[in-house]
Image (cartoon, rainbow, N blue to C red; front, side):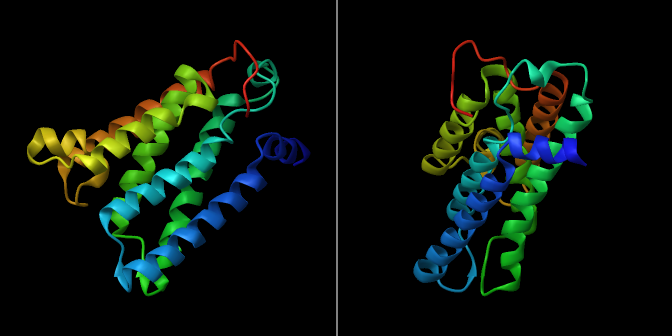
Length: 198
């Protein structure tokens, strides 16, 4: 238990949870004031999911790269549990709004976008490091919001903003979630070549 507590603290999980909760409350309040009752629009939903994923991304790396690669800990299972916990956190924060008048939904879109964006971020953490891992999800999502796509190719490229029944969007999200999980669990965050914030 002590090892788990140290792991959580080294990843700044309590601070990230607090920031994610505060971000959700602020987004919900803004959506309530400016959007009224009912489900929020797809743009608001995907940008809120992106914000929460960016917040939990800070927990994917620790302060010591060497420690993250020591054989003394079962890193693969820890990383898998970490990603599962991060996804659960994002989902719970958004789905609890289903009990209110202003809702972040539908559930299918929340799950698809959270899993896909978290997978993309985990893939970025393994490829370029935690500090830059949020850049691709940010750029791709903003592009999808500004240039909505139609047809199979359009739905594939703008999967984050598609309806919950879009098969191309679901397939892209599933692919990103799987690839990101596999890369992060097997390799962990990329070793920093120079000091970077965690």
